[in-house]
Image 1: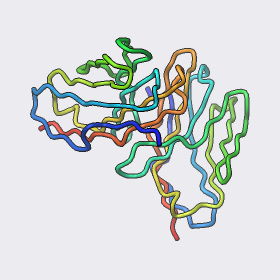
Image 2: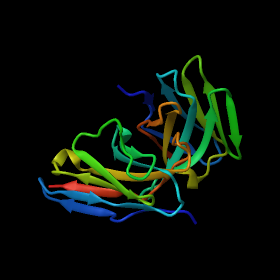
Image 3: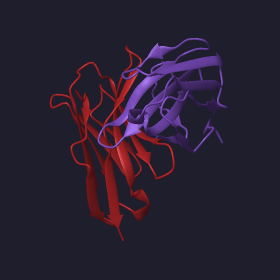
Image 4: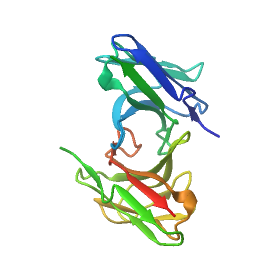
Length: 112
Length: 113
């Protein structure tokens, strides 16, 4: 029973265009949502987060949107660059329960 | 530059062996975590620790144990390795008790034959 789902295993985007990575969750107790980026042979690195009391958080080229009623969040990367090619993990945290649950990841390919 | 260091990048062990995976962090973080990463399943929490000598089971603790004798070191132990424990193992630490904003190590790819 996956509480955090990333239904697209991979995504291919042209350089300069927008990349949209999607994530769905089932547990309404989650109160923080995070995105991590992972390059081959490296550990995941924290990218951006959003609290459940917000619906948008922006950091440079990266924006995360949260739709609580749909239990859905998305990561937008604009403009996409070849260096953004990596696996992106969506994660949700139940801060009261000391748990962070990760999705299966989406591999993003940005073509030059 | 803050770091989480996992002692081995690659390990090959035989079925039934006792396996130790070591993780050291230099950030004075209270909280440390062990995850395994498998294709299609993402990162799954095995155990975590929020203080020295404290440990809590994650979602998939069966077949594993942990040790945290010092704040900077968190060890994952496979008591009797099995082929279904072949995986990428990732250690993380965090200053926040909720686990937000992890710093991960580079991972240990364990193959059990």
